[in-house]
Amino acid sequence: MTNSGTYCRPLSRLRKGVSTGLAAGTFLTLAACSGGGSSSVPGVGGIPGVSEGPGAHDVGLILPLTGRNASYGMRMRDAAKLALSAKGSPALDVHDTNGPGGTEQAVRDALARGDAILLGPLTATETAAAAPLAINAGKPELAFTSDSTQARPGVWVMGLTPEQQVRRMVDAARATGRKTFAAFLPDNAFGHAMGDGLARACRDAGLKDPQIVFHTMDVQNIDDGLKALSAIETRQPAAPVVAETPSGPSAIDPTGEATPDAAPAGTPSPATTPAAQPAPPPFDALVLADTGLELGRVITALQADHIDSSQVQIMGPALWKAFDGKLGALHGAWYAAPDAHDRLGYVAQYRALYKQAPSPVSDFAYDAAALAGSLIRKGGVTVEALTRPDGYMGVDGLFRLRPDGHVTRALAIYQIQRGGGARIVVPASRDVAIRPS
Image 1 (cartoon, rainbow, N blue to C red):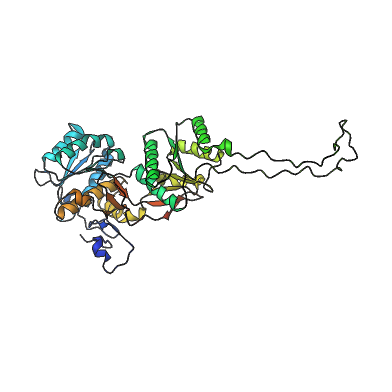
Image 2 (spheres, one colour):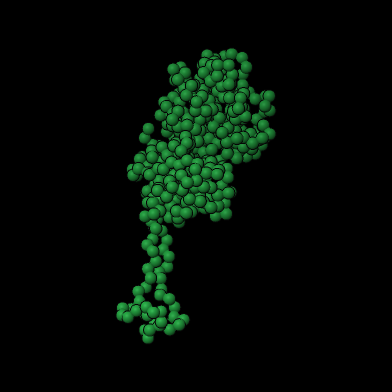
């Protein structure tokens, strides 16, 4: 499929005669890989590859199309349609996880219709219900959850996971000489996922185990927890030293009257040493995961305990990207997220077709459908093809499906600026590092 201003070619072709610095990965040969320009995708009603009748349903899409998550599901469905809109693409077989029988029935229906691969469902709970059915049927599943605990051979977690974010930041921090990591995290599922990701990343890098402290939403609990983690009491400098007076008779007579040795009026008082700053905390990199009101409380505690970017590399979740304009108090802090520039072509084509911007979660549906369609057109979906070592280029950059069900993503490092907002200080790699699985 050719679009004005768009290039999406296999990397083997791109390498011939063009030096781009892209070391690995295969571009998904679909309309929205990169670039802008006008779309040649037909209108919604004329999109090919979406069949109503039985037979020849190659790509099963399992999403919530009714209920409280329907708005997400419908945008993801539209993204998958866009990915399979090229002539010759396989059919898309869509099933509602909120229909009669729920997720399990949706999966059974897709399998009964002969789908070669399952895309979805959306949540971790739905994925836990769908995975055993897909595995027993021998059909690969690309789930949209960001819960890495759902990953297993044959079931890939396509969402942006806490582990992916933390691992990218640990690698970048190590490159700047950071060696001692800690985390101060909310005591909830997301906080524990960030903590688990940090522990694994440090272990894989040969670093000592990070010190991890979890906190509640209570202000006092936050203050006490960060004081303990940062060891602020042991870091406080000694009291200022007052210069001693010369030995000999007291300068002031016990009666209160001046003696001949007393200093004349107007003589400066004994000198004191300047107030010393607390010593650095026992870590040089700190992972946070809070947002909203709790993050404000954590920032206040960080300031009280003298933890800032002059001594510690503070790092946080990709969720900060949505409101980094308000995070000037954390200037110098990092978060890892896809490079927004990579998805501009996709956004433009989605908006041209559907008259609204795609939600970030729809990116995963587009990439999953694009990958499935590409493999089916080339002969079929196999584990070997899905897990090719050099990975694939999606709308959010390079990604690689590992045999264990985890997905490695090339993320950029954003740094929060003094006045708020963030800029990329470490670009997303164009080569996905192969890690032992």
